[in-house]
Amino acid sequence: MGLAVKKIKKHPYISIKKGVCGGEPVITGTRISVSLIIEMDRAGHSVDEIVAMYPHITHAQVYDALSYYYDHKEEIDRIIEENKEGYWIEKTEGETWRK
Image 1 (tube, rainbow, N blue to C red):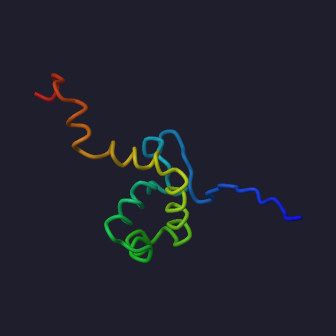
Image 2 (tube, one colour):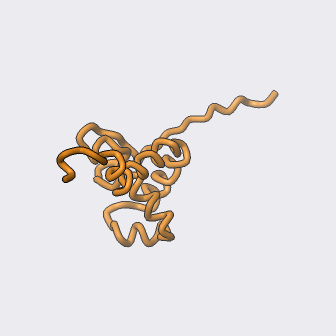
C-alpha cells in the first residue's frame, strides 16, 4: 500500500501583520512584499539580482515569496492590480477631491 502524502502549504519566510504594508504578505521581518518580489520577477530580475538589491534578504526568502505567490496567485494579482495608478484613477473618477 502506498503512503498518503499530506500537502502542507507552509511559507516559513512569509508573514501577514496588520499595520505592515497594509496587511499585505511580506518577507518576515521586512517591509518587502510578495507583490514587490513578483513585480521584480516579471520585470526580468533574477533571484540573485533581487538579493543584490536587497542584501538583507536571502535567496530562500525570495524563493518562498515566489512559492507563496503560486499558492495565492489570485490574491497577489489583485494586490498588484490595485496598486496600479490606473486602478485608482478609475476607482475615484468623479470624486470631488480629484478636481
